[in-house]
Length: 222
Length: 254
Image 1 (cartoon, helix red, strand yellow):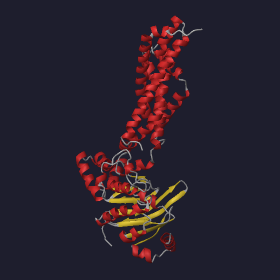
Image 2: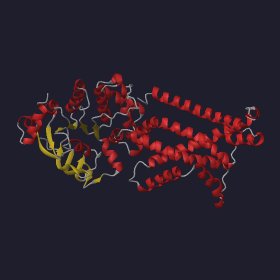
Image 3: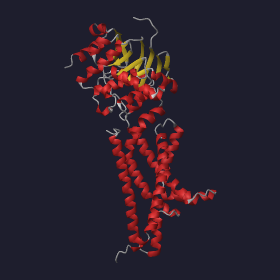
Image 4: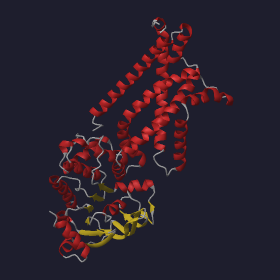
């Protein structure tokens, strides 16, 4: 059998359109995931604050312990039973964001806890409150350590976003499948889709490397 | 001996970590402008004692009063906000410097005054330059901590603590992490502070410093304060056998 990429070339507009939806949904989920992750990660620093700790810990356990696809379906197909009808795109962003947030929270917590205890003690000993010390001394240092694992998480998020094609969202996966349903050229179209994801994740890797280099040059990292 | 009200007043201070009792009920006063040097074998509770004086450790019982405020009483710490405020008046210098590595030297010094005392940026920087001049590091104002030697780091750490205009300075083995040739520059700054009338509590193994600068030398062993007195008495004619043993061990090391 011969490879025939003509359906990919004739459908490239749709694929690019889909890729831009993938980027949009991933970027928005990323922001949501980072905000959730930061709050939950900080919430898990002090087990003495029982209620907050328990809430944050259960969130991480439930989200990490169940499939993303099930979570997305619960949002999209489950919530309407309570007359909560969210647009597919919103479900996608919330679903991916909440999912990613659980993983980001562990990155945040780990990075903060990896900062030497003496930093917090020094900050407190000049009279800073816990919050001020966290914002001005601990988080800026932890942020630098978060970047490599966050890079992994961002890349995972881009790839996981393919699942939202099942919520009728017209992302690159969905657009590809539409081409296949007409042309039956599965191999060629899926190869093209894989290439598009590869480019997107590659660009993310490059961007994060840039950011890390800049922080290094600014003396933030030894 | 001066008869002013003590600036540090400690009664029955006890602290344990789990089953391990670190401090067995310590009573101690420090008068304003006094330099107190705390010596003793490692594990004798010196650092914990010092850390109880600015609330980095929470005592199990006993009373710690500093600068007229009750820092802790019967295991109860001062409320958070008041504790932060009190810490402004008690500077702390750590064995491992604990400079903020992401901030330049001058920002290390100004971050406290700006964020805590609400001093404006330019004024904080002007004050910081005066302090850097005092510790002899004006030329390093815009360097990053990673580029400094240990002695320079510790002098910046002292300037950082002074920037809060404390009434008491605590030094927790300030020269123990330094190469021998860098110890002198840090001790020199500490002597300068002592000569200016700063109240200081210093945990150290630098016996020459203790002999020269201390008003009171305190000997701790096994979580208790076993002897206290002027350095010429402690070093030449200590009452306790344990003090003699400790001094012999530390002064005859090669």
